[in-house]
Length: 397
Image 1 (cartoon, rainbow, N blue to C red):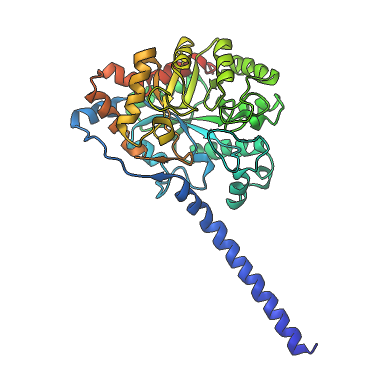
Image 2 (image 1 turned 120 degrees about the horizontal axis):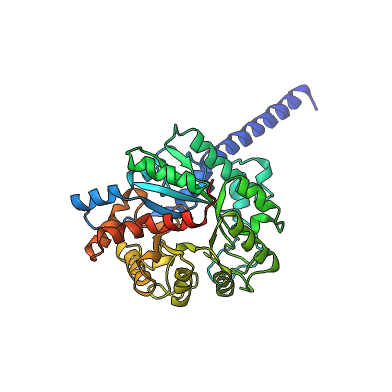
């Protein structure tokens, strides 16, 4: 080969390498945002007009949302986003006092509400790679959750006090006292969606607790080492490891979340509970007949523990993207289990489509007003009930 041809080959190789680099940069820069825009959508609903009196009421509330999956996505929690459903500026707009941030560490390919094999491929692995997360997260479910905890802690550290981590009753009481005194501060509590991130080892509960985990759902969309999922293949109850983990969580002050668990597992957890148990996000089958929603018996079981049912805003929770549908579910919880059992659990940024983002939460307050709830009842539903549960379960310090 002549030197001219060799030079052409070299130039062609360099050009190909440059093209690959450019394409890679473009992919890693734009793909995560495009994926989120596809998965976390808003189809604007017709919202009730919020009166001046209702807005004043809403602004006086301590609003609590028990579930969002924002940590899963590659954007800055402190900046107002142009995609997704919530971030700190929008939480402030909606007067949210405390947001529970959940860690999604695995989501099966072909995910559906009926049956997913435990060994199905995992969507979160591809998302972790596309977002250029630390290499340790690519193959470890535990490390993904620890990374999400780091993201939340970093956001709080960089927020100049506007976002505050909540790990204890003392933290919670300081948060509410400061807000009552007029301070603009939002609490953040770290949760996990499925204890498959224990990777079968109860000692990993220590690592998650030390990282700030104070609420945990036992399952997500598949059966795992601790419990059966409503969306798994076997849909069994708690395993021996699951019962051990349940007792340890109650001892440590970690809120037990029954979301996504099978009916058998839910029944066992409600029977074992000595502290309040929550459904962090979902609905009730009486108003939306979807398998992940609670039966009336399960709603009453949650109430018997002193717990709460967090009503979500997406179609599979309430069967319609309207404020009416959300409050229909709340009405039913109140009717069969008392006003003290109703709460909010949006599932914002959980690969869900909703009718409004967290900026517009006063619309729910308005609908409650329109249906005749008084100020005390509204304060309980919008956050007071969940605060009561957290004070009953979280460690003192």
